Amino acid sequence: MAGLDDVDLLVEKADYGAFCTVVSGLHGIRGVSLACYDNVCAGREDWFIPDFTHGKYLHLDVHIGLRVGWEFRKRYLLRSDLFPCRWERVEIGNVNIPVATPGTEIRRAITRFAFGCWIPPWKSWVALRGLGVLLSHSSSFSDKGQHRSDEIVLNCYGTSDCRLRGDNDTLLVHRRDLRKLRRRIRRECGFRGPTVTDFTVHLVRKTAYLILRLVQRLAPHSIAPKRRPANGGLVVALVGPDGVGKSTQVDRLVKTFRWKFGCVKSYAGTGDGKGWWTRKLAMKLIAPHKHHLKSAIEHKGSSGALRSWTSFVSTAGLAFWGLLIAVERYAMVRRAHRSATRGLIVICDRWPQSLRRGYLDGPIAPTSADHLPVIKLLARLERTLYRRMQEMRPHLTLHVVSDYSVSERRKPGGIRKEAFDARLSLMAELRRIDPEIKTVDASESMETVFCNLFRHVWLSL
Image (cartoon, rainbow, N blue to C red; front, side, top):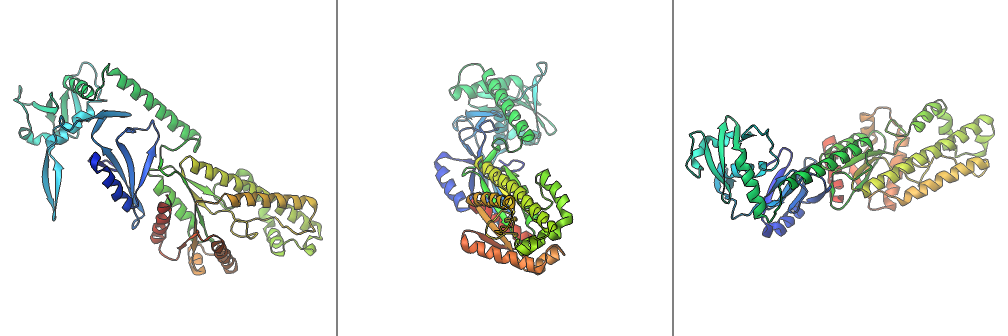
């Protein structure tokens, strides 16, 4: 049984332990869905198998026994002794594979569509599109004599028979037979009472699901995602000099993991990435004084650089700018960890560090002792925020490294060689302090770099 974007697997209950062993050996992870999400029921699980060679993963929709019911309430387990299942062998190369016969395929489809098919009261036949081709060999699985030449009587479940008709690619089933089939399945599963209960529960769960989706759209990341890894969320940080392809790889990772999981992107830099409008406005005001600010960083606020009134204003502006950036980064770090707590995978472009000022998203404000009390207060507040951010480290830090020639080729004029080498030196120092940091060589092709990053993130899940 195959879906549009996943593979449905039917596993025997006795073989479930062996199945878990197999998928664990393939680095598979199990997913957890919201309770109101469709198909959430006992006997069904989501598993994901990675393909590290291509940087993708496969979604396995695992079912322990055949279950049918409404979309949001598949609670009826079909008994194997009442559901006739026949198999035929198909040769594919040197492999002999058992495949369900057309009769079994139709029985399975009818038991599924028996719940949830609605037609106007004045119509007697329910249309199941795409299944009419299975009736081409109708005589091979007709269970009883036909009353009409264009009808087939098929035993679907126990003593429940359904009258079928074919119309090109459409399969027609009599509505009265579907009603009897629903009652038979409910009775065999031990349920009594009116069938309107199923419709009511289905309507309530679907309404709750749509409301949650609307809340997610209006207030992103405010509630848990509809599907998340069983081990919880993850905060991943990509760190590297300009021109090594961090932003491109972050976008690809987010797109890949967002296919089935809740995944968001965070940005900790001061460039064109997403951030506070106050910071973007301040950048436009500070841009004309860029050289003065860089000079203040390089001279580390020496007394000679602060004698003139212009130098003092530049240093004060630098201190305010550094505090504004620190506040924004601190909010980003807290938001990233809160999102991971709710089960989201957070991919961060850059990450703050407090080891060296002026490099790799570190502190900015000068810390010289001869500054005025206001400037020293701003610098002290900035250092406090960076110390707090240092305590909230990402779950996985990936350093993207390369030669300067790679950066110059991908982003010409983006960064000078001296600044590039200084960032690589700082990254090496950070790796000596924290041996858990992983390194990815960015001099390889973009596809190879992405596959390596995907592998590190997946194994951390």
